[in-house]
Image (cartoon, rainbow, N blue to C red; front, side, top):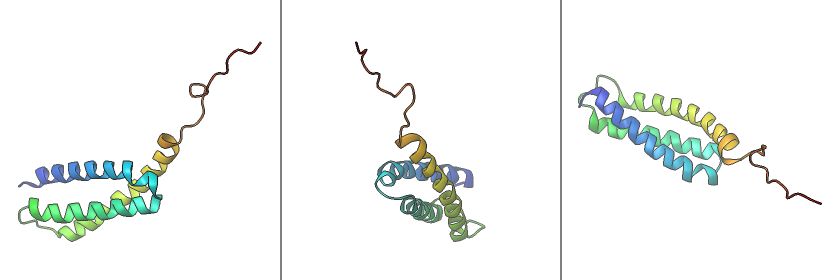
Length: 104
């Protein structure tokens, strides 16, 4: 399989499993645990699926998997912080405040 096709498949698999993990794991744990899970998931997916999908790679898949996992984990750390502040904890605004009934 060509490198571009394999790269698209790897990206889709990491995106789906990472999204499900972020929805299920992160709200119940800490940022460190969720980011560590993303690092391990990315490393294993790139390494194992890369071995299966890429024919005769001219580079080390272990190095590629490790560097990809480190970059993904760094990005996921900030993404988790964003999700915690902006998505899961709603801040009170004029649209989310309950309006009190008119008092007489």
